Length: 430
Length: 188
Figure (cartoon, rainbow over the protein chains, first blue to last red):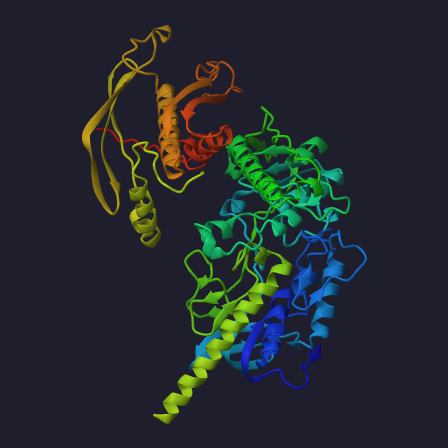
């Protein structure tokens, strides 16, 4: 990696990439291959979010053999394992060095606005002017907390999944974890294991086994083509992009982390967190249905895997067809928890994350705070985005998905720059 | 679904519903509806509620005709039983909302329904409303809904229709989730 901090820090360049995580670096690799001049602006160090904004025990949800960036596959000795954060930071940082990515570290973008036919990028270390811009600042910049959090009494400590590192931050006593995606389940499991009794508030979720018929579920999704499914092939891409992350964990023993496992461990489940009234948390009475929805949806996916295995003749190469127990729902699920009797000391919000575009002074964000884009091509000339869930394909949500997205979008960007240049020449000629 | 041909006919105009979904996505203010009821005491525990107008799509709307509902309590409550008990109207709302959802979802998934029957049971401990035991709530201690459905689909596909209907049901939401209720009064 060239650290240009001393040499540049400001100037004119064809392309600015905001963010030097795996998405920005994948784009950098592809732009270099097209000989397009660019710079990556990174508020911290390479892989900053992985360094600072993840909890300690997190591991990637994809096995190592899948984990790759353009031109760089995993070459370690544990292909079926899942990288922990130290390994992810190392993998991404070594990639940045290997491709010689022109990263300006310690450079925080303060605003982006249109200027002429390009963009003006104001940073804490000077201004950049560019013809095209790639947003690769991540999809998980802020914890998305429901407004009802404001009604929680002050005596109950509140922490969100962005702030959460490990159970040592949590006071002794009962804990309510709100949210049943990958984040909520992983945090609920380790806090409960630390001796603090956990209740988990469960809304709509996506259930998935870690292994199916002896293979990683990600193997099935990749091989059967699900991960390659393009946003143009699904009925309602906006709905798919809003789906919570599947209940998966990078468990070293490849065990499945689902609601049944948590319940067997002693975690109580309740419905979706609806609000606080008269000092009591209120849960939705829809828990049975959200569990039924997730069980049915999982079984549809497993049916599709089985059909694919039969069709492609690999039935004998994998273990026998299996089905998993329906999610347990206790008849005595709590509909309320009294926050005044001291039994519940902490609420952990694992209710999702959202990107931060507060610095983006270009009218491309809709009323729900989402970027208007068509498969990564943002609704403004020469503006692109990388690294959002299902940006172009289902695998866009994962590190290995950045490669195809970067290849497509860098080609689109090159065409845009070429056309813009021709247009400028035409104007001069006239 | 084995084929892409739309041949199921459950009497639901899915094209119109999908068209409305598209239109209201573009114009969210038109999606703001208000439902209304007016009610008058008759005698004893007997009252009569009228449903006539509502607001939606940016303007006043009216049912094809006004509907009236008599509500009362049964004779074991020492009442005259001139109509269904108010809590039973909650079951009417839930059953009809889920059933309408099932017909719509099945139509959208091109699944022909032949019969859809629902049986609803709601437990209630009268010690709540009679003020005998303060730990007992006034309302239901739970609602059980059982659907018997005859349709051209697998068990899992039928279960998925019923689950999706609950997911998109207004009355299911009203009974499973808290709603702020503001009651005001004026002397006439």
